[in-house]
Image (cartoon, rainbow, N blue to C red):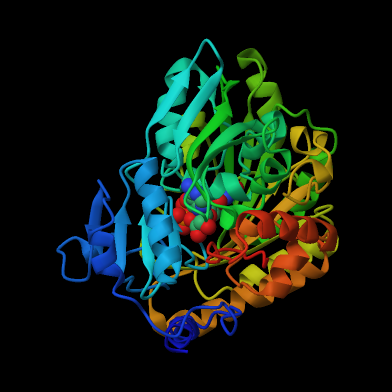
Length: 471
Ligand SMILES: Cc1cc2nc3c(=O)[nH]c(=O)nc-3n(C[C@H](O)[C@H](O)[C@H](O)COP(=O)(O)OP(=O)(O)OC[C@H]3O[C@@H](n4cnc5c(N)ncnc54)[C@H](O)[C@@H]3O)c2cc1C
């Protein structure tokens, strides 16, 4: 099993848990680069001897350094269809790359086809219709840059270099989720290149079950070449961030927990806790003249004066962590849903960050509820609608010698939080991948429903480099 071995060895080098024993890769690699060069692809076809190959095979998480047989930089949906057919015919792994930000390195592979969507990144806003058409390889920054001049947004996440594609297909949460729902709650339709090489427009009316599945089911069902979203008005947004030292965290977080009860959906809150700093955030999307009264209760908590409080606009907020989370560092993430920020959770958070291997590792918590919880749990494949909070442990480091220390800190911290968490999980921020974890994230009922859709649209599991639903 040459390919399967190579695949699992490179993962093992990164000390990751991935069920690589039965991914179903073939025994031999066909001369896939030659096939790609004759597939009529209009975009770029790069092989290991091409100058740009090393730059283009990189992904955001520096833990993953893989060598695809060919990189197809698709220029159109037809190119995407051709690349999909190429990988299916050659029976080699197919990695789909939108923004390249997959925590477990799913958007690259050894010896297969890396389908790079970064050239399909146009964003067209239709103000009259209240919609935006977003290319499958667009970044969040592309979407914000196109929508914000019109005072509208596509509700999504933060960090402008993250891909809109992967984020949307997993669910998509961010600072305006409480007001406008998840990214998938604002998705109207997609153009999807299927495993059989065809291109299908999928929406609620034409393919309700497939449309249900792609809203939370990740990249399991095909390659989205274009998303159509409903845009939402956002004439005003202002964030307040208060900085405390970690020694003050227990009293600040207890007071925070009390204040979040009954907050309006125009207000989003959250925090980031590391070994030396607690950053408390509140973001107001309501009328401008109510900004101070909305934000001030969160600017000073637990009777403790913060070291500093800064205000930022929505645009600044969306990019605030861009530089702290650059391409090429080594990253681990694991998340979950909490019903409350209660004393056991606070105690574990504080204990854990005090043991963090460096100052860049942290735990990030964002308040959910509001419009996220308006949608029925089974209306989309995403799970966790009833959770009040989402947490994610972030391990961040630079040197391979620190892999073990940082990974075990991340896993240990997440293990403690998982014990306090609700069932279900957000598949987009899970570095540890296994069949059991994927099933657990969706729950048995949703998982089985996803399997039925997978059997119909991808019976050979061509799209398997993801949180895989096995047909
Ligand atoms: C710095 C950073 C910030 C983040 N912030 C947020 C946040 O605020 N909110 C949030 O919800 N999540 C956030 N995430 C998690 C994010 O949603 C996932 O990492 C997501 O997979 C990133 O998408 P991508 O296109 O960049 O990833 P890629 O690595 O390019 O793709 C990941 C997977 O998504 C699938 N995929 C991507 N594009 C397509 C497509 N067009 N068609 C079909 N399949 C596709 C493929 O299966 C691929 O393996 C963040 C991640 C990072 C690293």
